Amino acid sequence: MLWSLFAVFLKIGLVSFGGGYAMIPLIRHEVLLNGWMEERQFTDTVALAGMAPGPIATNSATLIGYEAAGVPGAILSTLGMVLPSLAIIVFIAAFFFRMQQRPWVKTTFYGLKPVVTGMIVYAAIHFSLPGSGADWMSWHTVGMMIILAVCLGALIKYRLHPLAVIVLSGVLGIAFFQ
Image (cartoon, rainbow, N blue to C red; front, side, top):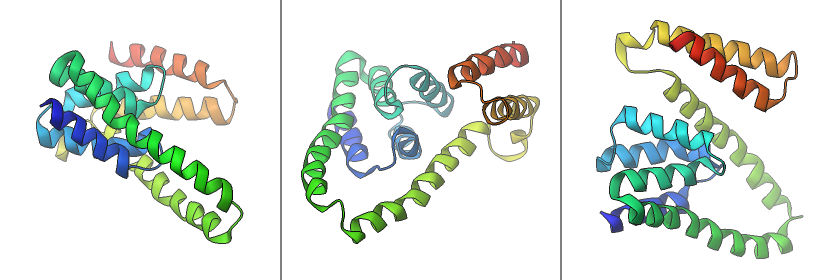
């Protein structure tokens, strides 16, 4: 199992672009495929990883590895996730420093933006809906949509600090779901 955790997160670290939230669909697929967690436990793990300081994908890898195989699993999952990024960033930084003004480099990065945005939107939609089929529209979902609307309004209209909006969403979550 330890080798499997390392290999899966090494693969995810090698092929994923766009930051932690863009990696969540791939992490979810691998975790459920390998049977390391159930859907609900995975969702809770990602929520916890998002609240912890640091990148959500690395935090998720650490928590998933810990759940699956204890401290050694957490260490190997984290190493698997981080090592490819470290090696790739060192290589790309040296290359990009020399090539940053070339038009094809600029257009390549411009073309990646919609893909990354789409993956983040997919992850947000997937995690906002509690299940599939007829049970997706429940009072729980309605409560989450109200919290979303209030928080978006607080961010956009009133320009509240994101930390205040996080606290506000937590308070609203307690009010709706207690």
